[in-house]
Image 1 (cartoon, rainbow, N blue to C red):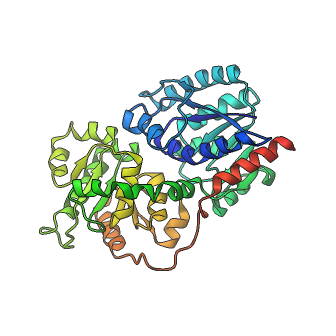
Image 2: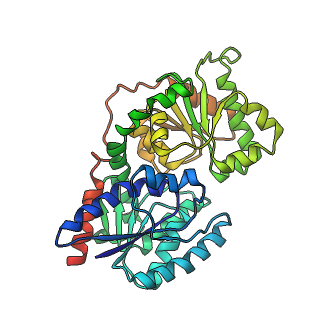
Image 3: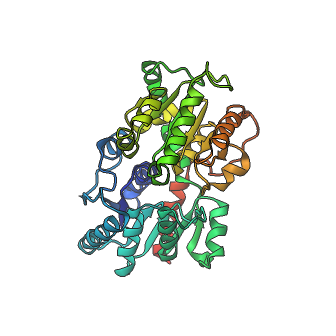
Length: 377
């Protein structure tokens, strides 16, 4: 059986690292699954794509469509056109997509027009904010998919509430728990990276800000950076927090900050570094006191690595993390709320009983078995 996997963004490469290994293991079986990877080029920066394939030992893509840098509509349209040509050439039994990016939607739309069964990994997540492009992508993809691989019980409920047949919904646990199991220990080899940055375990804050709703809104972005700068000034702020803030900077965020002198001055209070490899990022996540982020995936990685999180957004698709207290939302427009949330998470008790929301790290094995069963029906 042939599977055509569509990837385009860093989080998808990371998830594929676990599942692609399981596909390779089937090659010795009677019902083997042969994967062909298509890289749309949505993330075209080396640190955000090619380096991951090398570091995580992911099979190199057979196709690189080199699409990136345009608007959502431009990118999605060009991706559909090129992905369709690849599907026609490869004639796969399934098209597999991950998550909620433009690449996800393009792959699902192209496959649906050609009547190729669609497999959606990380299905059923909802922020219930239709202003987010990711929400539109994930909802449409779920309704097009033949199998919705849902990572959590809540994701299954969301799908059923939207009228998707229970026969199409399969709870698998979360492939990110797989990558945490596989690569979490390997990240310990990068502890010298912390020393190079003059960081001490549990004595620094990790921050990542990249979402367009935060970076494109200058008032919001200034408020976020101003709050981070305030927190980092231990001798001058009322919280008396003596923790450096390290911020691997996203290319989008960097380009905006460099154009605004006020933001550049504020960033002098932070330890700004270039984007880092996945394993170095895991090392930073595991050893931080808390994480401040607007990323979807890092919220979950924080939990998997036992690090409290502040999410600089008004809503999140990972609702179970909010209910458990491991994550808390902070309005990016409110300095009082953001600083208060940071203070709250700095005092979070990481030794309390922790519920297992995402499984034990073997979701990929379940997904492979269900794909094989689907074909045999």
